[in-house]
Amino acid sequence: MGCTWTGNETAMERGRLAVPRRPSRPRPTDLYQRPTLGSTRTRARREVECRPDTSDSAKKGYQWKRTRHSQQQSPDPEYERLKQADLETLELAAQEGHIDLKYLDEAGFCLYSPVSYSYSRVGTQKQLEQVPTRGKRISILGLWQPDKTFQYALAQGGFDGESYIKVMDWIAQKAAVTLKETGRLTVVVQDNCSIHKRDIVRENWQRWQDQGLLLFFLPPYSAKMNRIEDQWRQLKAHEISGQMFEDEYDLAMAVIKGVEARSQTGGYSLERLRFKSA
Image 1 (tube, rainbow, N blue to C red):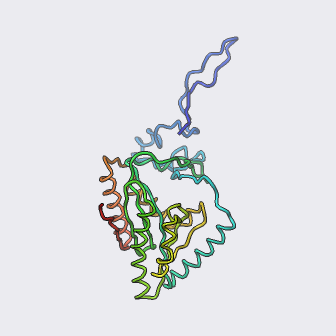
Image 2 (cartoon, helix red, strand yellow):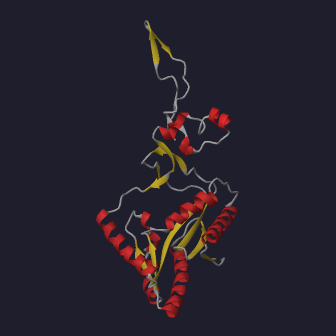
Image 3 (cartoon, rainbow, N blue to C red):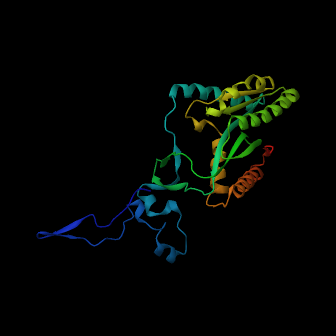
């Protein structure tokens, strides 16, 4: 965590000599001094297991809370407000059955799971600045239609412009069927990731629109507006967290099983696009 405690940072003055004080027992006021959650004596006497939020650290202004990655820049408040209003209009149209609204995003999974919860002061959330990803990983590109459908594809490493186009072509085909059968357009909400706006991708925008698939771009640095983000958090926290994987295959199978488990629990349909091997 970058915080250490030495225990001998103070000394008593005895005449002309400074005698180091014997290291004292860590006090509960310091977050990183407590080796366990809750008192061992309390657990032994009461035969209960103390929860993180009942420890002395919580009483001193800390709480057990998920650590999130922080974005390097902040969104433009005015532009974000305008886009939020547009998004709310789309959400209302989806609720009334006029359009199909889907949220698109990519997430990555490593062979090991980082710590996602830690103590932070009440009213704040500890954040870890994002750094370049190292090591092997599996990426998932998903489209979430809240409480109705979850469509996704997996890739080793990350998605590029060509693989993104394959996914969107797949979604556009489904959008064409929806438009023909119901008259509803399909709107995909996504961020400003570079692969979403590459030249080879832009060349397909008009074709997708003709098929009934429209794109809505979120303002920069506004991940909180993308509702699929919560799906990634839940998937990582409840299905993948705390596991170590030998290789990418084991990791991919765990992601697939996790997505299937969430689909069964949530009662929504699940579809996966499988890329053809070269």
